[in-house]
Amino acid sequence: MKFDRKVEDAGLMRGVAALTPDKIEKTIKAVLDGETGAKLKMYAETCVRCGMCSQACHFYVSHDNDPTYSPAGKVHQTMSRILETKGRLDPEEIYKIAQIAYTECNLCKRCVHYCPLGIDTGYIMLVVRRICYKLGVVPQYIHDTTNSHSATYNQMWIKDDEWVDSLQWQEDEARDEFPDLRIPVDKEGAEIMYSVIAPEPKFRTHLIYQAAAIMHQAGVDWTMPSSPGWDNSDLAMFSGDNEIMGRNKRRHFECAMDLKAKRIVMGECGHAFRSIYDMGNRWLGWKMYPIEVVHAVEFYWELISSGKIKIKEKIKEPVTIQDPCNIIRGRGLYEASRKVAAALCENIVEMTPNGVHNYCCAAGGGIINCGPPFKNTRTTGNRAKADQIKATGVKLCIVPCHNCHGGLEDINHYYKLGIEMKFFGDLIYQLMEKPEA
Image (cartoon, rainbow, N blue to C red; front, side, top):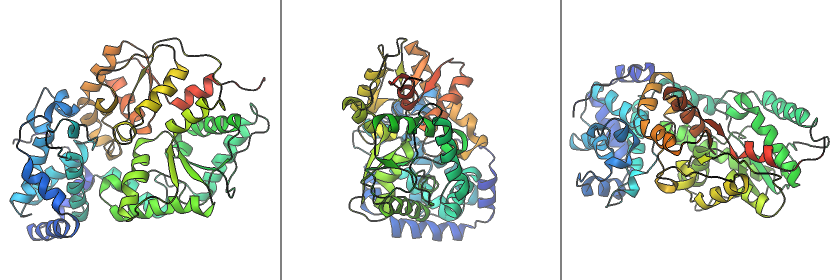
């Protein structure tokens, strides 16, 4: 297949410059022999190139059915080449393989639902990324972010005192509205340890304010940890650095266990939830994670359905909902998300398709974290999502995931959609009953 879309990236260029065919062959053999088995072999041998997966991929649809963007086409250009050459590839082909695996597949797994044989292209691409990581060929931005997480236990390089200062700052701000509100730090034995991703204290501190207001109004027994490990994000999961992925997840669970919390409630992030309940815990070899993990969408429904949070009025204008891949397709939270939405909004206009068949935001799977060199890859690769949103005719979209926010904000500007995006937490805070000022 012709490949005429090379994007220059400092990490990829530096990585392939240090490669030789012998090193490539040896590394690939080590990963395939040591870390894969029947699952990859079965996928490689059963794909019949029927093309049923093609229409499932937003990159394929957005590029006018270009077969090089189809899931089977991307596997053909990456893992199939690795297997048929037994890893004897030149450095330039590794560059192409890395670019496809890291920036043209969101690991969203929508194609699995369209494959008659159930082939998981997301898994195959993760193995390709693992090989690229072991070869040292990783896009610069996601590699830097992963290294930050490795060094400081948070991806934004936030110092320990800055993290606690951010919590105290939000507590002070919120006490103007809720005079006896507290953000309990390091409280032992709380029912809930609330965890967030590092971009919240860095860029979206209002989400911590709002979460504290919701917890306070609902009378929840909760806490947040001060120690390293509070950041539940995990870009190592997407860069292929599985060792750091496991280390980060172990530390996150240890935070909750050190505080003797009963369960972890996570903010509105999709990839971090996937890391906690699906990938990080499996890498650690745990049969089941040691503490129950609940996504914010489930938690919000608990609070609303139990009457702990009362909604004083609903949004009247038409609203649509983005279904994040990792919590809807990956975790089955479609029903819970619609229950919360129905409690908040009078008129929900569904995208077509939606639920487990909804299109990805094109930011997930670590692609947005590959940085500016690949922004155009994401925006041009998700015309399908822009068309989906346009077809609803609405101007307000609920987006319960940080990565989805980033992806949709970019296509909002690029395709001039003119939509406003809100987290569920934004709306609950706005609409819930509060004490008189």
